[in-house]
Length: 249
Image (cartoon, rainbow, N blue to C red; front, side):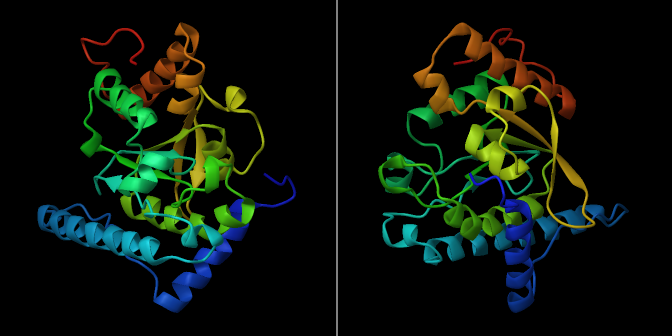
């Protein structure tokens, strides 16, 4: 990633331009009253519809060269009410084939972390990537590809409005936080992610990518990810699952 490029600023400019031409997009209401049940029901339907609209845009996207190389775009999937959004780097071969995020070996490990380690279901969270199409030979995403694709992710995050973002791996963390610190220095502590000017920040926890754990499998690395997820659970006021007092995976 180029140090002199402020990805957040550039992407925000792209997003503002898109909003200008498309008329913007809906965000959830913060109303709390006797009408809250009906408001929440309506908002849920609207958020789901907007997420599906973004997914359709992603599937048709040809903003960068990856659009002509993909088998399937991978917009992301999960609950529109997710309290946690997991963000990876980009799709791999299995994801490109199926059009779904984290369905290969890394995805199977992530599922274990979510279910066994956190006591949640995959359908409780939202899972996506920085870029929505697979780079050739799983190479690192280029800066122009990240800048082209990030507005989709920003819109998804703003619509879902999660309490916590979990950045899976160095590329996701660096892109979201716009810095070049190694993942070993970033993980283990909460950072702040801001979706835009005058908007509230969202807590962001960087941790190791499941693919890294598969390549560098050790009790120490498992424990580091486990410690990160325990901090996420504590921040959300959720208890550690009774059957999980050690790292999952």
